[in-house]
Length: 153
Length: 123
Image (cartoon, rainbow over all chains, first blue to last red; front, side, top):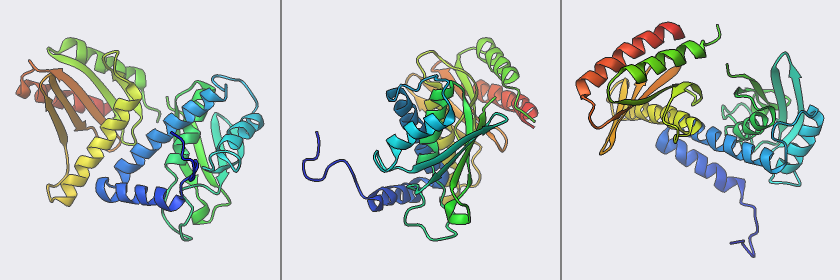
C-alpha cells in the first residue's frame, strides 16, 4: 500500500528515535549487529536490483550507480563521495550519512545501517565475503564518514 | 595474524560428525560475521551468525543490568532440541545445535572441550 499523502519518506527524527529506543532496550552492541545485518541485506538487494551482481566495473561507475540509488535522487540514506581500492582494501567515503544527522560534534555515534548497506552492496558486487568497519567520522574530525572493507578470510 | 578458517572448519566438522546428537556448529565473530560453520543446509549462515552474536550480546547486557555477572553461556531448550551459545574468547562466539536426545551434561562437556581447542587457534 502506498501512502497517498505522506509519500515514501519518513523523518530522520523518527528513525533515530527507533535506533535509540532499541539501544536502550537491547544495548548498543546488539542493536549495532542487528542494524548492520539489516543494512547488509538492503545493500545486497540493492546491488542485485541495479544489476551489479559480480560485475567487474570500475569503482567510479559503481559509485555513481550506488550513489544515485542512495543519494539525493534516491532513498537519501547518504551521499557516496568516492570508492577507492588499494591492496585489497576498499575505502568508501560518504557524507550526509543518516547516522550523523542531528548529532553534535564529537558524538561517538557510528553509522551501522549505512555501513551495512555499503558492505552488502560491495559483497554482492565483488562476490567476496568482506569485513567492514567505520574508520573515520564526520562527527569526530573527519572529512567524510569512511568505511573500510577487506576480505574476511 | 589471519584466522585459519579451514582449520576451524575442520575442527567443527569433526565435532559435528564425531559427537552423538550434535546437528551443527558455527563459530562467529562478536560483530556477527561467520568465521566457520557446519550447519544443516536449510539454515542461512549469515542470519545465524548475526543472531548468535546479538543474542550473546543481549545476554551480556542482561548479566550486567540485572547483576548476574559475566555471561559464559546462553542455553535455548526447545521441543526439538538445544541451541547453546558459548563465549569463545574475546573475539568469537560458538553456537552448537543438538537434538532433543542429547544428554545435557555430556553436551556441556563436549562444548567445553571444543571451546578450549578453538580458543588456542584464535589466540
